[in-house]
Amino acid sequence: MPEVLKAPLVVEFPFTRSLGPVLSAFLTGLRERVVLGVRTGDGRTLVPPVEYDPATAEEIHDLVEVAPTGTVTTWAWNHEPRRGQPLVTPFAWVLVRLDGADTALLHALDAPGPEAVRTGLRVRIRWAAERTGAITDIACFEPYDGPRGEPRPPVPHSGRFADPVTGIVAPARLDYTYSPGRAQSAHLDALAGHRTVGERCPSCRKVYVPPRGACPTCGVATTDRVEVGPRGTVTTFCIVNIKAKNLDIEVPYVYAHIALDGAGLALHGRIGGIPYDQVRMGLRVEPVWTPGARHPDHYRPTGEPDADYDTYKELL
Image 1 (cartoon, rainbow, N blue to C red):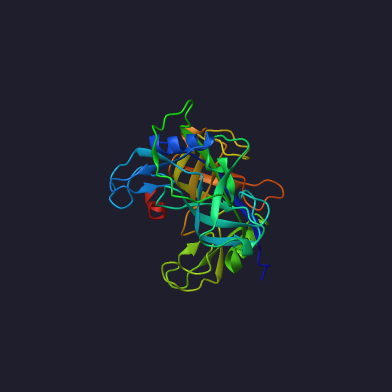
Image 2: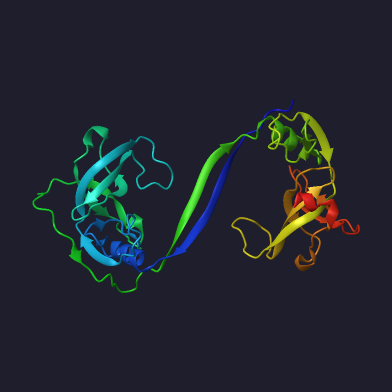
């Protein structure tokens, strides 16, 4: 039995979104060291603001300014900050109800240790030195010993600023260690030898590639290994027109589902060696390997006649 593999993996992409008038005003306000909330029909002030009342689904847009000071409503200590978090030293995640608000804002609290944090602690915003119109314009919260006095009521605000922020790009990233398990480890080990191996269900006899260790239809373990391919048939495909980060492939290119000969499940791969607008369902393809790779670089046409639709319609 081959060694069970594991490897660090990163899923990362920039999430780009446009902003409506409420969130645009909120983020632009942070750039100007102004915290805005939104007033609901029954008089509550929501911070951060939202465009629709979560209780009634009514559209809301009456903006108000609240204070940069507030009270911790609950908290949790972060012993080991991770990459991209607000502070590099241990800190507390806190929910802070700013003075004048009826809801709490999640952010980081810079404190010397968990013994310095408590529910009811008075805090204030520490603004970032450079602000761009993002939640990170609040660098963090810090303990505040100033006078509490009467809560300052929210002040109506037009929400108008010079050069408003109309969109944001939020980087999303997930770091994790992936272990493919027994079945997929054997599959990857075979790929290193330019062979494609799946596993057959003892009940329905379907061959799964890549193997999953069990049949998702019958719920029984699969241990009977079957070599499939190397040739296969394009069952369906898409044309990619957006260039991915760190991927040295010119667009447009084609990504397809390919039913390898003998497999009961289509896998996916890139199609090369043919103009993108000539790729079609039923196209017969074969893998192209590069030295040292653990999987085919792409699939190219074999020159055979196209497969009949009835031979792969169950694998769409």
